[in-house]
Length: 49
Image (cartoon, rainbow, N blue to C red; front, side):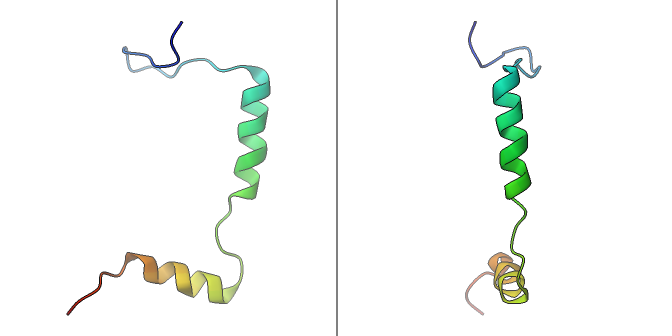
């Protein structure tokens, strides 16, 4: 079966893939230092006047 579903429901994934996704998400926490937080906060600003 294809990994993409046309019915709009989420396709089932293997247990090992689910555990890998959970482990990776724990590492993706964004910037931790104050300098990194300030730099990331500027990402939404657009250049120009």
